[in-house]
Image (cartoon, rainbow, N blue to C red):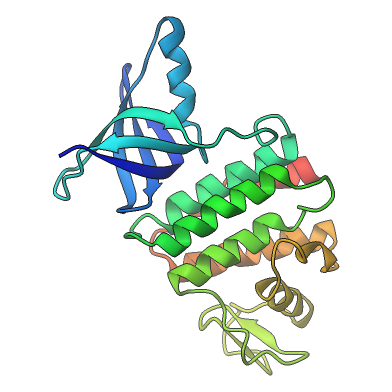
Length: 242
């Protein structure tokens, strides 16, 4: 039975000349792959923009749990963005968000709290003033991980402690392996994990530190999420933010 649904597009991959496989993190079902039929002519061609990554959509679906690809119809843009498509820095962050979510939530079931966090986060980014969102992607990645249960535990953090990437905790001395962050970056990650979007700009991070933390988090997610890759969008962020 067809029913209304909300979702955030995380990726779109061409299936053949007339269709795409669109992965959507939905409110009711979690991450779901849909078949999307491309429009090639006239005004209907603008419909194809609805499957751009991080687009918020409303649509109807006849959800069948056993199906490989779900069907969707009557797709609408639930909240058009005013800056993300036109601001190179915000576009680069949006690209990171979509790639990160595609892999981090590939097996995620319905999680209304996480869905609400993603929607509010992308809305915050769209409205953010220049100079206030340089740390956004770091905080967002940590925020999503808190909803999926793999966020580093900051309860045991103390000055000088190190983030043990394998265990996701902070320890007083190096472990018997190389999967850990140094004291300075561990401190900055602990600060980020305890911040929100309105206070994150107060955390003193250099461009080099942001790159290092992003690479540390990528490695951390690879240790804790099956088949998580080295994210290609990291290079885009480095190029845009310099």
